[in-house]
Image (cartoon, rainbow, N blue to C red; front, side, top):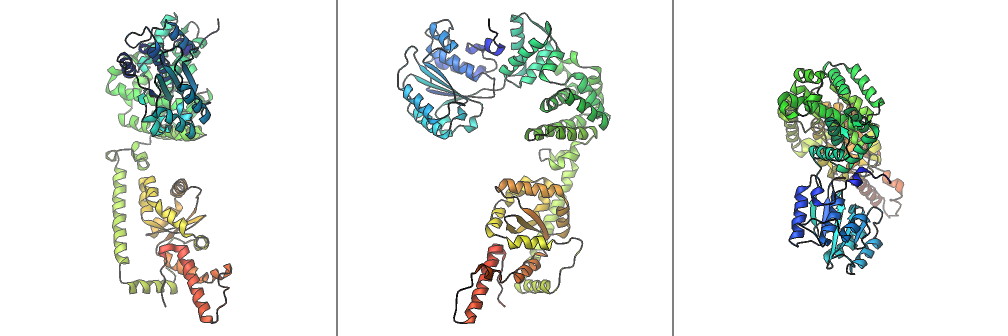
Length: 581
């Protein structure tokens, strides 16, 4: 006899067999009993939670002539043919490979015909989010005008990709991740039916690795049965799932407590060399830290696992402070988020390991994490005070800038005649002129439009620095940013993390725009702008724009002046002020 995988052998055949989805199955049973069957259903949820199984059970229940309390009998010819996949009136479609308009049009044509054997013609469309836009439009027409005795059951793991017009015409049921205890109980039931021995903790490891999916749990159990000898042990489950052993975690956390960075990195290398996967490794360490915390505060909640705790674990729970465990959980959670978007998880693991072993507290790391509560750190309070002080200084500067126009013009002329006195920061004049030479008004407008979003995307300290600045000029390859204070400008130019954060967020918000950032002081901007305009006043002549013949030279001069004005407005937009001599 051909071997069948456990998840196929133990596939749910009745609503009561669907584990962990009692609210959904009871609702469907009641609808069948009360003859309130909808023409379209949408089953959503993570993989392996029973969506497709529930769809087939629903198809059997609405067509079974011997249905009792909304449950199919699974004995009649209709039920058996649906279970075997041979019933012509119950059609299963994989939208991943049949996602075109033609396939949906074919379904619409067939839906016009009455069922041949069953009472209802049922279409089960799995992974429906894979349908193309045209296919969704074709399906929408069918759902708007449903045919009699036709039921559509749509299943998906990504409901956000389904048009709202489709969702609004269906009854939606959200399948949740199955609780670890429910998975353990079901696995134990299956093993007892198969007369196989096991250790309770082994099933806990398998259930945790399944992450709420029964199909994944049964697949892992299948591997564990093949790997083990007569009895499924904890060690077998750890090997099959790639999880860390208690001994490994004990040694690692103990080294972190002792702040032995070299030992921690050595243990990490040992764990990775043994084939442990980065994401699973972080999950195990997070669970270990969680157990430490719960064992400190409410040990009775871990009564079932207490027999598996080692002496090292118990000693660590007594000696490590809750605050230190909070810090470790924060660091591990941060690393877990970071490795989701990288192809080099080892780097983030090593960085997290160094943080864990050096005793870096949440207080230090929270300055770049807005999720940490302000009450937990004094540094954030200090940063707020600095921001307040900067805002006051900015307010004072604005008041000074609101002086009469004559004083402003006088200061501008003084800047022309005399270079500003340098107090430590050297303005990159060549880089500024390079940007101005290629500057376009639309680039500056684009940057200004996303400026507030850019500020919101930065950390507290980075936001405070950039708040005291504004964009002055932009080109396809460069951006000039002027800071109100020279000390902040100098700090920003020398802070590579700040430069990278600003550049990366700008390129993310403006497609295909990765400008070279040029930082200057606001005080130097008028002089730089005037110097550039003086040196490029006749640049418009090079484009052949002044070749028109005029009878008087005065008119030609006026044209040149107008072209220079136009060029300045293209470069600086509203920032350019045309002053009549």
